[in-house]
Image (cartoon, rainbow, N blue to C red):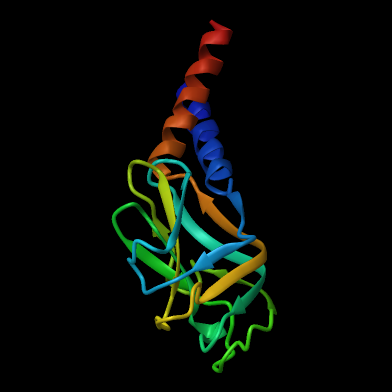
Amino acid sequence: MKSLLCAGVAACALTAAASAQESLVVDVSNIESFNSLGSPENTVLTFELLPNATVVGLAWDVVIQANGGSWLDEMTIAFGSTAENFVFLAPSSTGNSGDNLPEANSGSADLVDAGLAFDVAEDGILRMEFFEGFYDAGVVPNGVWLSGTVTVDYVPAPGALALLGVAGLAGSRRRRA
């Protein structure tokens, strides 16, 4: 009876933990984008999530500005692990010169529904690179993320959740003994 009860409690704990979505809010104010993906000139930010966490959603509320002949829809963020890029966010659909005028953009994307959810590596590092879809030579910087935030929603890896559930059961069993 005790083992059946423990199994039921473990299943409930795992189900509750699986729905435990966490969020990382990143201030993107005054971040400049210069060049094509992978250029050493680009701004790269890294954040520690959890090992093998799954990134499940993005939301943004930003004001961006393209400079010179650069276009707003070229301003992009690559999200991925330390080894690979997985998802790209280009918040503007303005396919013409930015003319140095700011543009506000907001929205969200459910990466699970879009089939784009991805795992960070065992190091738990999320990498964000701010880059240009097309490099406009002589325009420095090509674009500026003037203000706002980007929110990254993620969930812990299932293995980590199972360990947390087992640890919780072991802890509760010890207290009773």
